View 1 (cartoon, helix red, strand yellow):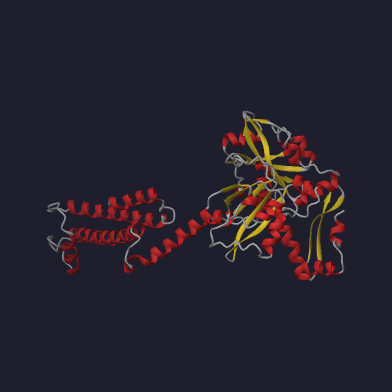
View 2 (cartoon, rainbow, N blue to C red):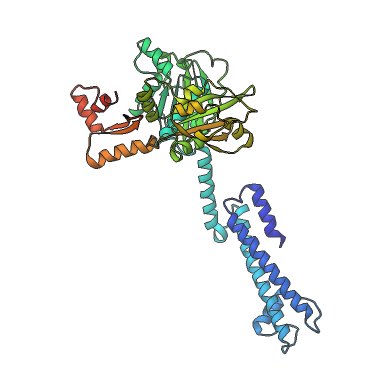
Length: 469
């Protein structure tokens, strides 16, 4: 009876317990039940008057039971008959459960089991392991607001000028999204350059001009994708394996980092010489918690608080486009709750929600109006924040906030506008929201066919673009 428990212990040690928890527990539980039945039968046999107290063998007991006899006991003894039947039934169940346990254990710990004995379960096990391995390596692709936040926040933490997210589509690595910092955009405009390194990379990728194949481990993007190891190159303009080396030289890119991330590869680079000696050391943003904040909680922003020299400070943030637009229309400036929170330094030993969430390791939900320890309470009320959520994550605390009036945002808003235009055959859609008595365009969509028609007429803007101002 010790074998099933040993199998249970081995399964825990080898990591097989979780996918097959129910099978092993069933085997163990079944054996325990049979053990109780066996002990019960042995007890009845031993207390029968005139019994020798010994137990017959399993084979002779089973044969006698099938013949209708009671082995060595007189057929006239009713107690002996019942006890013998109990023992025989128990032994038969022990054999059946032992056989089932042997198949489970052989399937788990002997992958080369024969086709007759366990190929079905083994095939399922292999499929499960491949799926787990695939998810562990690739993960769920970043999309929508979570993707936009990840790109922007990577630039915040690393000091990069741009960030690009590469994914695999039909065997080729393509640009799913890119981000260029406002300071880099301003510099490019001042110097009269058209576009940016990230934007041109996206255009080339969209037109299939880069030829980055997944099965060809040559350039830094495909190498990082396949080997799942980060890469760092300096002087990319002279890198022989970089397809875009001439483009990098044109835009003065000095160093580029490539890191594997959820569903693809994250690339980010700089035009300064700060990374020539070593790549930047920056924390990974918690994508799972960020997705939860935007898609489940309907957050308007996220901020990442990191501890340094006994104080928490904001090192990365992202605010949704719709919320930023509404704030600009209401306030007439480009300030947000995130930008103003960067001026705060919170002690790690304090009693505020950031320090408390980090110290206790639990998620906190704060009502701004009722909070007594939130130092930024007046600031939160100024920007119309109703509730704040603080999630302890690796490297710090992720904060997200929900404005006073719940509104559509992110992927949900984009999907609603497009699907509404598709169902009605409309050329555009605008999402209007009320902000302090004013109606503000918080989101919009223009159908591609209408945009194409406007372009044919020589127009670079649309009615939607004009309605934003």
